[in-house]
Every structure is written in structure tokens, then in C-alpha cells.
Image (cartoon, rainbow over all chains, first blue to last red):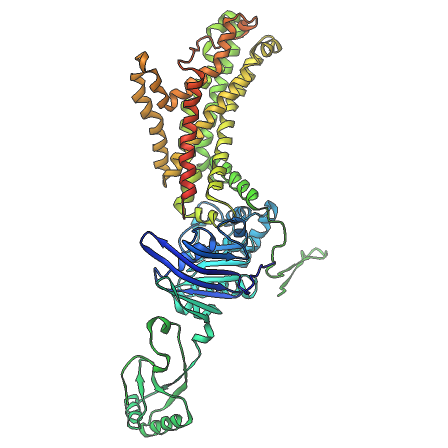
Length: 316
Length: 321
């Protein structure tokens, strides 16, 4: 049974500061992680790993309090039997077969030996490694190793799993598979996921909520849908005569942004759409697509205003 | 989601059906740190002996074990043959087949064994990053290192005792009157058990420290061999001067050999007091009494245990993955 804190969050950091000598890794951070898939976004040195280490109880905070499943994880290591962790770096003993390694890790998490064996086989089946389970892990591909790393985090059936860059080093197909597994971990297995990444596209595709860390502080936190909502920018793609189309729009006093993919115009009301229609007709530009533009998570970092449109020239 | 796959054998009998019932939450017992420590202990025991691994992993530990058991067997055969062929007088001449003599030889072999296999317990986990996975489970770093140490100690104690048991068996069976032999020499048993445990405990502790400080197995092996040989080379010439006998406490090999003398010396004292069964079998007639007082010797021995053990424990307690 998942322990839920009074706030409804499974894990909270309240006023947490972490200093390493003269470096402040986390600066008075208040965070709450609720059920679902939460993406922890930030550049290198933003404090993602420190947050995860504090949540796992590996590093005590310099100040502030941390509650994980209602417990103080630094004082009660038993809470970790309800947590799973998938590190970014290599962590697998290459000479051991995956089934044996997972069975061992399940036992180290507190499961009796017979149950551990069953859980190891089941978990390997769920991550798609059942057939290869008796092979030494040194013979696995990068994608298979990532799957074993995920499996070892899940083998003891935790309530929460913390994944540190789970798709790092994978090719596009492997990345899709891994992100699919991460989604499955919550949607089908019911295990809450905290997912650290510096790749916004991964977080956008996978997470329900995001927390953006910047220089040890929480820059933004909320539902992914909030940050990818429709903007007041209309994005238009044409199949030809783009320059004439842009000139026709400018002649009508429309603010235009030109990018590689198409043309973004400020506003989305009926009057603007009429102006666009007229400009298309005048420029004899065949319309391929016209839709309100959605924000991208990347804009949280680049500071590009969602309503400004694509990069490129703008003008009246 | 249920994915049923008929699996008929084609022999007219009803076949099995495999249902994929999807992911199942675990509702069984969670046994916490006790189970975690036991798991690390079991894994350590298997790693040392190469159990569940290929022949290459088994080669070194089992070769050393066979060497020690072979040595015990050889001494047993020599003792039995000497007794039967030459009688008590001849057996007395074969003092080199005693439990003490084996203990004396075994110190070096046990160090070699430890240098070859102890690094398997700690080095790969740190080098591969597997240690991270242990420390994010309901296990502290000190639980981990204690369980590994206990696993290695178990193996070392068994390795120390097994050849002595073989030797005892040989000596008992080689004697014309085994019961009389046991009656006369039963004190050998607690002595070789104690001496074996003393050697095993110190070698296990020192070798775990060497393994804990190095990330590569080769470095750990070299470090351990150096810890054994270098102090010995330095102290050996100094101890020729009687006033400087005490410096041998800095040599691991010397301190263990002195412990052996102290533990086995009771046999010699029994002989000196004219115990009636003493001459029934070749015995430890050549044991020189230790140059140190028991208090000094025990302090040095426990110093060698507490210092490396304390460094290892502190190092792992402060270790942050």
C-alpha cells in the first residue's frame, strides 16, 4: 500500500539546501512528487542528481526536511525497500546472468529467496529480456543493459522508481522502447516514476508533470500539458511562394516570424485568419497546414516566448 | 490483458494454457536488512569460491584449497606411515607432521589464497558501479562490508580447518590405537581450531581492507602481498637482535606465527610435565615458546584486527556513491 503524505505527495522536500564545500547544489528547494510520472529537468549541475540522492537517502540535506512515503529516509533505510533506482552510469556485473543478478537484487531488497526468483523472472519478462535471462550481461547490447537496469529497479516492486537518464546512449528505436517501458511502469504497473533527463523531448513524450531545476532552485513545476498548451500563434506551412506570402502578410500589417518549417503569425482570431486567407490568395501560395502553435518544453530553457513564433525574422 | 496460448502436446491429452496476467504487484513479506545482509553474505561466499561461474572463476580458489588439503593429506600419510613403519620412536622423529607444523606452513598459503580471491568481494562492485545498487536498498554501506567480510571469514575459517581435519583423521587412523591417540591428543583439536580461526580472522580482515581501498583486483592482490612481505623483510633482520624482538609485531606473518606458538605451546608444556600419553604419536616437540607475553601478543594481534577493520569500516561508512 502506497503511503501518501498529508499533502497527497509521495515524496517532499521542504526548504532543502545542500552545500558541497563552497558549492550550493540545492538552494532552499520545496518540491512535492505526487503519483504519476514526473520529469526532473535541468542542465548539468542544475541539481537533479543531488535531488535524487537526497530522495534516496544517500546524502543528507544540509538543511531542510525530506519525507519519502511518510518517512525520513536518512534515518530509516528500510524505506528504500519501497524505492527503486536506475542510475545513469554502468552498474551491472558483466559476468553474471541477468536472472541471477535480479534475483540477488530482489533478495537484497528484502524479498525471500523463492519469491525473489519468481519476481526476477517476471520482471525480466516485462522488460522483454526473458529469453536472454541466462546470458552473462557482458554479452548484452546497450539497450538490453538499460532494460536490465530498469528491471533491477523494479524487481522488488517498489512504490516509487527514480530513473536517472534512462534513455541515455540509446539509438532512436531503443529510446522509443525505453520511454515506452517508462510509461508502462506507471500506466500498467502502477509504480510512480521520477524521471531525470536533460532531453526535453523525452520528458514531453513521457511525463505527466515536470519540475525544472536551474542552478539549484526550482525554476518551474507543473503539469506538462500546462507548458505545452496552445499559444496565441498561428503556424502556417505553404507548398510554395513562401516569400510572396510573407510579403503579403507584412503588407497587411501582420507580425510574422519565419522559420525553417513555416511561418508563424501573432494572434489567432477570425480577423487574422481572414488576412492570412487573403495573403495566400494574393501570393498564390498553396496551403499545406495551418494550426495554433503549441509550446515546446525547450522554451522553458531558451526563454523563447511561446507567442513569438519560430526563430527568424519578424516584422510588421 | 490476457494472452492465452494453447499448448497441446498432440497426444490427445489436454494441453496447458499460458496466460499472461500482466504485471502483478508483490504482496509477500519484505524482510528488510536481515534478508539484505544475508543475501550479500551468500553472494560473497559464492563469489569467493566461484560457485555458479565458469571454470576460470573456480580455478584459483579451488587450486589453493586443493593445495592446502593436499598438504594436510601428505602430512597425514607421513604421520601414519611413520607411526606404522617405525613405531613411536620413528614417529617422534616426524615432528614435522604435527598440527602446529601445518599451521606454521598454512599462514603463507592462506595469505596467497586471500590475495587471489578476496579482491573479488569488494573491487568489482566498486569498479562496475554495482555498489550504488546495494546502497539504494535497505542496506547501509557498513552492512554491506560487514556481510562481505563475514562471507570471506567463513571461507577462510573453513579453508583453515579442513586440512587440519584431514591431518587429524590421518593421524588417528594411522595410529595402532586410534582411541588412545584421541584420548592423549584431544587438546590438539581446540588448538588447531583456535589457531585456524585466529589466522583466518586476521587474514580476512587485512585482505578486505586491501580490497576495499583498491578498485582493481590486481592492485588489491599486490597491496596484500606487499603488506605481508615488506614488513616481514624489514623486521626479520632486526629481530636477530634480542632487544628488538618486539618489532616483529609489525609483521603480519610473524604475529600469526607467534600466535600459533602461543596456542600450540600448551602441548609442549604437557610434554614437559610428563603427560603419560605424550609419546603416543609424533607431536609438537619443536615448538619454541613465544618471545612475547600473552598480553603483549594478544594486544598486537587485536591491534592488527581492529586497525584494518576500523579503517575499512570507517571508509565504507563515509563512502558516498
